[in-house]
Amino acid sequence: MISYVPNLTFGSSGGAAYRYNVKTGELTDISLDDNHPVGSVVSDPDDSDKLVATTCGLWYSQLWTEDDWENDQV
View (cartoon, rainbow, N blue to C red):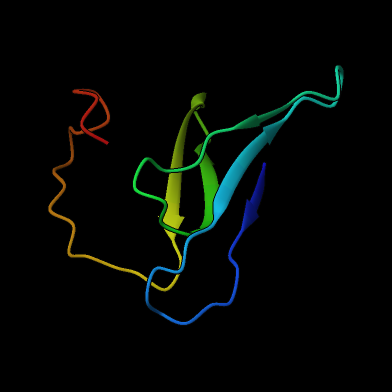
């Protein structure tokens, strides 16, 4: 995973996230649809197919419930 934030200004200046396949050298753009900068990405320790990406320099309140992972709401 590679994330990029250009000119961090705390105003959603854009950015990108890429998945890098070390076996093939393929780089896939997995950026957020609304072009928000990605600060970090973490995986669920129990299911590596689930990732959580955080924005950088842009934030909102989140209202999650304890069963959102099971209901694919996150």
